[in-house]
Length: 172
Image 1: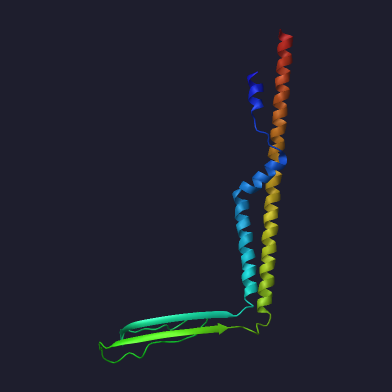
Image 2: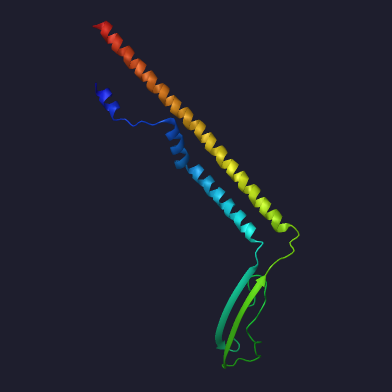
C-alpha cells in the first residue's frame, strides 16, 4: 500500500523528454556546441578578409629630447617614428612629439588565398557540426538504452510484486 501511494507522486519521464534533456545538459555536447560556434565565427572572419583593413593611430609624447620615443611599428607594418635622433650628450631641453596617421590596406590580388581560407573555414565548420551530431546521436543511443533498461526493471519489479501477492494468497 505504501508503494502505491509513493508511485502516485513519482515523476513521469517520456523518452523524447529524456533525450532532449540529456542533449541539453551533457557537458561534452555543450563543449561541442561551443566549438561549432567558434568555427562559425572563424568562417565569418574569413569572409571579412575581403574588406579593407583600416588602421588609425594617435600618439603624443613629451619629455627631454633624448627621451622622446615614438611608435616604431604599427599594426599592418606601417613603420613611422615620431622621435628625433638622440644627441651625443644629455640635455634637459623639453621636446614634444606627436604622430597621427590613418592607414588603409586592401589586398586586391590575393590569388585565391582568401577564397580558399573561406572554403577551409566552411569545411571545418561542417566537420564540427557533423561531430556534434554524431556525439548527440551516441548520447541518445546511451540514453535510450538506459531508459529502456529502466522500463524493463520497473516491469520486472511489478511482475515480482504480483508474484509475491499470489504466493501470499496461496500461503493463506
